[in-house]
Length: 335
Image 1 (cartoon, rainbow, N blue to C red):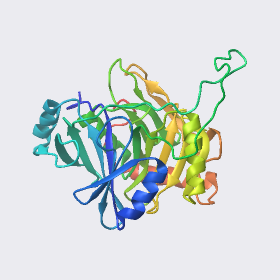
Image 2: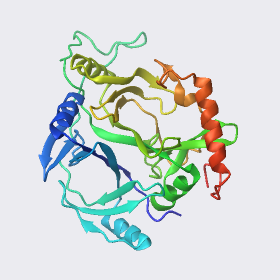
Image 3: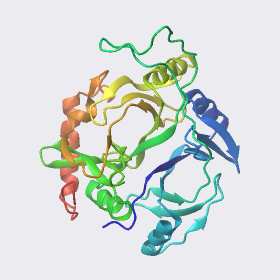
């Protein structure tokens, strides 16, 4: 049993030397931006006070936040960790608990924030298919502009010891494994982890952990948009603004979502996605090949800097094997 079960990701937090440059990009990306207490905040249409934070400083990833189900859960976690629950001075108020994971990542768990009303902008129309023509006597007319991010859906972290990180997050937050990824047969590289909401559907993953060389880094942060039309409109808009595309356009194998990845001016990867898989707690974990990380159902493979895919797979396998020699953590996606 975990100490608590979180219900979703809350936010990602970065630092950047120029908030105005970051704001320009985030607005092109479709976020509603505002500044408070010297920080830049981005929010969507889900009513939450923010889901992206930028603080002044050297460009780097700072933290990921998760949403506890209640302040009481936050207090139970605080007692387990021997740390204090604080009043949050950020938009939305509420309470916050600050932790460090095995790699030193800052983890912020929040509860009791004040939320506004959600909105669900309709971008596009229903589809006419060979089987049914529901769009009758009306045309599709789209307005060019940025996408409309509704919520943050997930993020990914590079970790030094996947099994140690997996245990830490599962023990505290109740995450479930959706897919474990192998660098080679019986050599786990990482996993896609989702929240445990019982019979309530939740995203294919809220957190991805991958044991990769190169040290600590945020792999990407992903924001759900309302439709394929909205994703494609946002893609064209970002292109028109000469923004840096990273991996576009396609449909993932694991998670199934349509995806469109971009890099902000400070090198962070942000994803627009829509139509992702959702699961209840009863869905068992699967073990998947590393090939699923490099491929899309359609669209280009993930960029890997011109290095042959086979060589990358071999190097990752050797890297993870060398780490496993010194690991004492239990193995298996249900550990």
